[in-house]
Image (tube, rainbow, N blue to C red; front, side, top):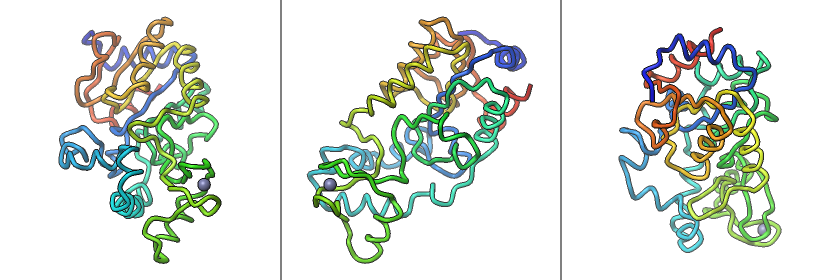
Length: 251
Ligand code: ZN
C-alpha cells in the first residue's frame, strides 16, 4: 500500500491502454441504493436480512419468498438514476480503453448510464430478470411483478411450476461459469485493475484482484473502507466515489 496521490493515479489511468473495472455497491449508494456492509448497509442495520439472500432458506420458506417478491417490487433500482461515477465509466469506454466493466451490482445502473451491455459483466446477475430454479426458464421481473400485483404472492414458473427467483446470485449459488470466465479473462488482460465501491469480501469476485496483480496489472482501489486487498494495491483512494471517479478519469 502506498500513499500515492490522486494526480499520479490519474496519470496511470490516462496512460493505461487497457483498464478493467470492478464495481460494487458503493458506486450505487450515491444513487440511493443502500450497500450491504457499510455503516448504513442493509445487513449492518438488519442482519436478519441476510436470510433473504440464502438459496436454501429461499427454497425452504414460502413466507420468505413472499417477502422477497415484495422487496423486489419495492427495490430502489426501479427508480434510481445513475450518478457521476457511473457516467465517468461511460466516458472511459468512449475513450476506447475500458477492457471490461465487471460489476457485482444487480441494479443495471451502468447500462442505464450508457455503458454498452456487451462490455458489462454482471457477476451477480440482474434484478430485472427472473429464473426458474427447476427448469432454468428465464422471464422478466416486470412480468413476475405483474403477477404478484394480480394476486399471486409467490409466482411459480409458468412452464414447469417450479420456484422462481430473481436472476441474481444468492449465497449458496455458484456464479455462471461463462460469466466468471469472461471476468477472469478481463482481469488477466489489463494494465490497471480498478476496484470501485466494493469491500472485496465476496469471492470469487474479490479474487479477480489477485488474478490482475499476478498478471502484472496495477491494482487501484477506490472504496470508503479498508479491504482485504489493500496490501497488494498500488494505490488506495477513500474519497466519495461520485467525486473521485470523474476526477481520476478526467484526462
Ligand atoms: Zn420452470
